[in-house]
Length: 476
Image 1 (cartoon, helix red, strand yellow):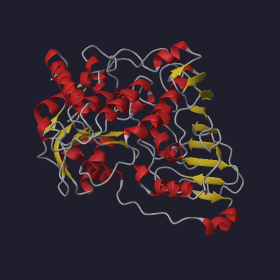
Image 2 (cartoon, helix red, strand yellow; image 1 turned 180 degrees about the horizontal axis):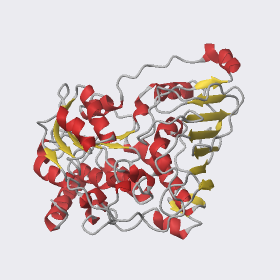
Image 3 (cartoon, one colour; image 1 turned 60 degrees about the horizontal axis):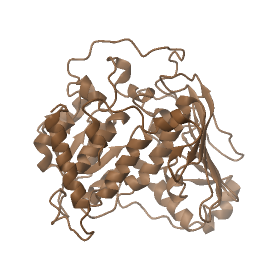
Image 4 (tube, rainbow, N blue to C red; image 1 turned 30 degrees about the horizontal axis):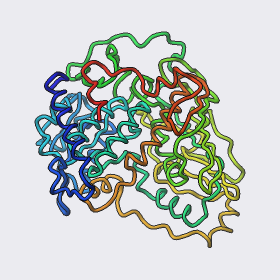
């Protein structure tokens, strides 16, 4: 169903029902809350997957491997594209839809939970509709494209605590998560004052003309693609192949660049366990090939976080770009690519001069880390040997990120990257992207959540008004 009076009426009716329900006492159970669809303990979760190609397709296959998912619906704006065929061939009997709104209209009562593996700009509306209908939500990182959208998603999740949420930074359920937590609690990681995070592999937009003055010229829309629904809340653009199949990540209008792609795999544990929250200042230190349309060829972004309880102020410096390497401390060791870290979503695996990862500087120790679930090591090696007897035992993960979500839907676990944790992390990226786009320094008031030195940037926290017919998703 395309957005219209009937669809808006249904959405607002569901939203009103949820709003009324959220005012009930906290002891209301799932059994007495009919708007909550959830699998019983020991059963499979009835899962609808929105976005089944590229990363969304990998998510479908990963959920299938858990043995905990019963697929009841697949949705993708292009069911005829080559990148969706792997999933469709594997699960030929699952009902198919091109429009998530139609899927919810027809299948809503059969769905317990959803996965959302679509471009960044489309995360928000799907998430808000799913939550309004009482569905658990797994959404790929970053949560949304604008600071305000992430804020609304957090508020919607908080308003409906019976619903499970999870952001798809998969390493947040692997070894690095449990190690960082254990080392922090044991006092091994303490007094952190600086972190560098680096992703120096080639990106899709490297080599593009950075002097462009307009968007790419219009091309014929593929016959199988619903170009209108693909845009979601964003304003329409004439079709061009450089907008789809991962290319959307290149453009400010649709994606979040290298920072939004890899930031959640690099600084997620530090952000959570060091209680960093939101920065008070974000500066674009370097931007090679800066333009108003797509992301720079190289970027260095400085995020400054204030002192927290018993913890000193901390700076995070982000580096992207093939030759834009951070300072490498003595004793760093091997710099080459780690084969255990997934390649960038560029379609081509290219060697980088430095493994994607981070370097964490505390007052006493320096830690070297990779990406996703890669664990930390103390450097140099001589210091690591001195500390070996002091390191605590690190528990093994009871579930990967996908199983963790489904087990949480069944009431067996709690998600490790719920919106309450993933939201502020995603907002850090939103602020970084604003500094990139405007090529400036932003001063941010953490209490009022406003940018105080740049009116245009402050307006961009909300962004452009949603496209006509999509306004209803901004109501909680």
